[in-house]
Amino acid sequence: MEANGSLASELGSCFRSTNFSTTLSATLSANLSEKLIVSRWFSTAFGSIGLASNLFALCVLVSSSRKMHSRARSSFLIFLCGLVVTDFLGLLVTGTIIISYHFTKFNWMVVDPACYLCNFLGLSMVFFGQCPLLLGATMAGERFFGINRPFSRSTSMSKRRAWFMVGLVWAFCLSLGLLPILGLGEFTLQFPNSWCFITMLHDPKNVTFCLIFALLGILAVGLSFLFNTVSVVTLCRVYHDRESVQRRRDSEVEMMVQLVGIMIIATVCWLPLLIFIIQTVLQEPAPDLLPRQIPRQTEEMLLIYLRMVTWNQILDPWVYILFRRAVLKRIYPSLKTRPSIVSLYPMFNPSLRRKLTQESVLQ
Figure 1 (tube, rainbow, N blue to C red):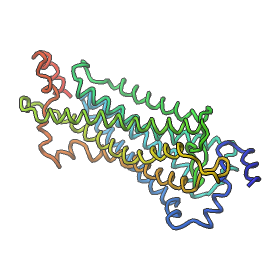
Figure 2 (figure 1 turned 45 degrees about the vertical axis):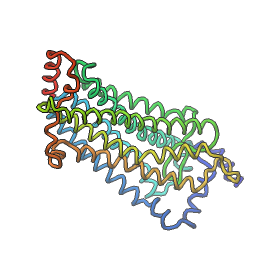
Figure 3 (figure 1 turned 90 degrees about the vertical axis):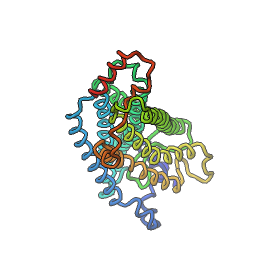
Figure 4 (figure 1 turned 180 degrees about the horizontal axis):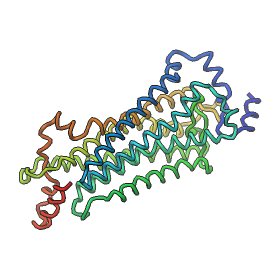
């Protein structure tokens, strides 16, 4: 054990005490379920399905955007495009490193003694993990103001502004991922030595960053739930307004169905991991652990929750593919009778209502 400790001190900070004996112990004592979850084919199948799904969704998005003349809908498609591109690149970047390890079993201490590759992988995991959550919250907020405050904006969000918002989310998540490299927390090699992620040790810096990461994700999911709930209630009021049944607002319903689907998937896939991180860093560490050691059960549970998170990147593109208006109308033909959102606001003068109704028709 002392030799392991001295070796760790000579290497980068991404190596912990358990990293030196993981390969041997896994070979000798791994049970069937553990072998399944660390299987190379498990990771390869997840990555391949996710890449194919996101690539297919991206092709559908590009095709739809060329036919779209609505500014509100086109800005929403830009957010969706940003989400799909983020999920695709996330699977591609992280999967390339992780699957390469599973097939080659390279030694991290030889290949990456200074932890450059591990830090890049950890940064990628944080960046591509938080981006979908924050993009989902941004999309929900944009639709909330578009549906509930239609008179606060003379025109819908422009494409340039939508891309700026996507870029702002990317920049924020990149800044967040850089914090451990700059000293707030650290990225370390995780079981079974195939990936790097935030470190759930109990020192102040690691605890602080883990809480920032988890609470930010929970906040994004919570905001999405709040915005989407209010928007859905508003649309239900519009649907039951008999004074304006002639007004069509199919695209609003379509966008909300897709947003709710994205929110449900993010909640189911991400909340278990985020809650697990908070519980782990706030509980008292076991007294019999070596320095910088995490219990094996905690490492295995972290890997299981990561598998759940991967489903978010796989299922997100199918929300758009399956919940498009053309598909929804086949399932629910009466969708075409949705009224306009303007019908909720009879107190506005007729000329303003006519102007906004004309804009909604163009949308």
